[in-house]
Amino acid sequence: MFIETETTPNPATLKFLPGRQVMPAGTREFTSPEDAAASPLAEALFDLGDVTGVFFGTEFISVTAAPGVEWPSLRPQVVSILLDHFVSEAPLFAGGGAAGFSVPAEDEDFGDDPADADIVEQIKELIESRVRPAVANDGGDIVYRGFREGVVYLSMQGACSGCPSSSATLKQGIESLLKHYVPEVSEVRAA
Image (tube, rainbow, N blue to C red):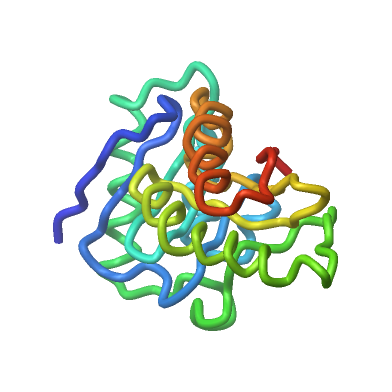
């Protein structure tokens, strides 16, 4: 088995491609060792001590290194853990498979006005068809959180959550796209 690595726009995060499906559907982000207890693989990566984030996508895993940690020393350790996991065909999650897992909902719900249902549907369709695939290429994900008074609230996940260029991605990329196709959108904000 060979695991490819790709850089992401976030210099602290590398994207690992095992050449097979990681999650059958959805995504899952772990931002602490406590979160990682749900997954033996994520837990093993956090146990390295130099990892501050793990993100499971459909066909990739993004790993974020702690500040000051250099990837040339951490990458072989991460690859070794990933190889052991996939070669042994260990379960991704404790107590079962990955079916039904997705990015956990944030506590803050921005809510949608039922009168905006058509606008919200357009926004969600654009995010799903145009934005999410591009963000996944960079080792992350984007989650719709709400639309209120012309403002779209989105949450960046994985490599994108700590990326220095994530605010530019939201403002110059996603905001421009949504404003172009959905005139009711006046702004995009990070949730």
